[in-house]
Length: 165
Image 1 (tube, rainbow, N blue to C red):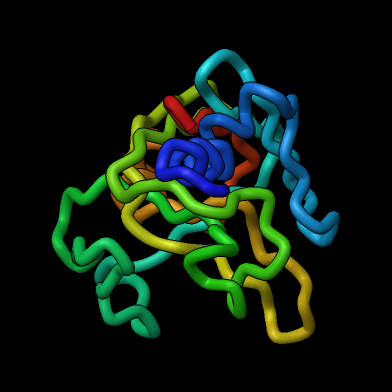
Image 2: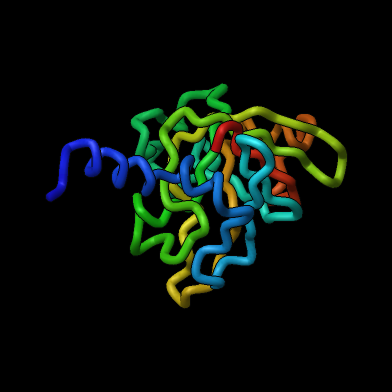
């Protein structure tokens, strides 16, 4: 006979935070080049491709994000991570299933040592139509400018740390 306590325990065991205590890394289905490793309470990925999205420089982006924060507002320092539970068609097999909006993500540019702290505001980057990956983390234009110390570049090789992931 199942009790409410047993149901609550099973539900708690399926959350990412409890699973992290037993697993040391997350690879998804293997189609993403990114591996997130557990480091204390955080998840860390090294040498991943960071691209940018949104803002006035992205004519194909409406500014709408899954969290409701607009990327068209200047000064937004946010990021997007491919979360397979949130967007199963766009991010199938991603190592990251789900994280709450506002989760802090530290991004470190390997080329120049610049670091920026962002907040999770959207899902992406999505896979291309052919199933290949475009990148492992997207940041807003303001965050990319901070990573390049004022200059805007198309992408960067970064280390990322999901704080409390």
